[in-house]
Length: 585
Image (tube, rainbow, N blue to C red):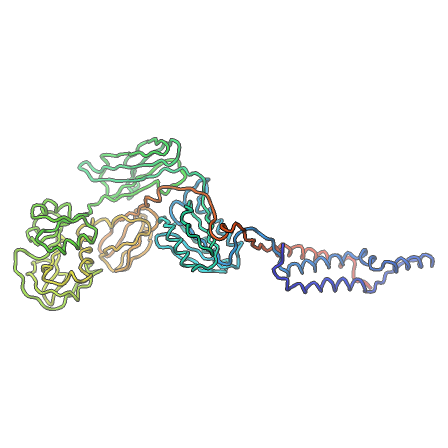
């Protein structure tokens, strides 16, 4: 035990003053003496030990002295020494990945860690505390906050983001944030490898709080489905991460109506994987696979899939400039070169890029026409002006030079002009027409060229009813047909809005959602990352300065406030004694 404020020891003069007052104050007591003989004897006894008599006969003195002594102790701010690393700056690194929802003992790791954070925050009230959450881009939620209420409020508002933790990013972020200043860092996760701290910072103490309890988990590792002539076919890959045989049910549902389309009973051996197939499912726009089994991690027990017709390949006419093919390769498409026969065969399964105008009357899918092989170009002059269209949401064409243009198509919508002549058109089917050869322009020298190609592939290759598949909180550019895109759950609960030109950020909870813009309503799916379908466990440990020196810092835990109640009790007792005895004459 120790005292933090010894400077207040001057307050000890108050109980000393009271003590001296009781020693030397005059006392008059009324006594009945039957004889002068006994009177003389009584006076001699009082003169022999006057101080002791005062102490023995005055309970009020004891109460006053006890209250004053305790008050002095409170002013000295007593504390007890407590083992633990309590540096001035404390940093909480919080793993917000989906695996934190695992429940090894009926309570999730997430709730367990939040309780521990709250306890540490109470112990370090008044000390600076920072809170960092993990993810591909770690976030600093609180910076050296000393207000205990704000710290506890921030901890209470923490939520699981389902995104992979990318703990290496978080550790590097902490190091750059602290700049080698002394700090006590606490990482709350499920498991962490000691090798992450091979280069331990001398000024930082790393405290890893994890769980070494084995977790029983079954997960949907993969879920796929295809359209067939008989409807839909689906296959589910299930993994059993526990060491025992588990029995249960696999269900295929329509997430839009919650109807059960098919189900199968399965039995999986410990640490094994199993494929479950479903055939002749009714045609649906989306499917949901769901596990009905007893495990301790539910986040990976469901998976959704959209049955769209997205195109991920492109066939480029061999007669076009090589830069056209390079541009399509830059937007991550599988690109091949081909002639008229290859393009005709692939028109319904890939994006066709050609200068052959006859393809406007072939196939059922729109394509990209660059130039024309059935007309001659004429000179052009002037700046490019574009209409308000999603094709130009990311690309600016005003500085592009165009030397020659082909004649426009009748009854096509003009999207961009050079001077007063059409430059880019769109057919009613959705075909995109560029009325110039690439070599007649300097467009490939501008960054707008690959951006325009990307917008074109999104428009030609995407399913009109689907926005695609995302991982939790994934950032991605998405074409919008209106000024703003609004995101909703399937139950029509509003989530957020994405302004035109802003980056699309997917919701964090894996599920099926819908996006509504000025023109249409499209579905999109958020799926759990593969890394979050495997639950890990590991021991807690400490590395860094404290571990290397093998010494424990002793923190202070104040106990002065425990003495307030005894002081109040003593004051009440003193008042009661004074009331009963009355004031002395």
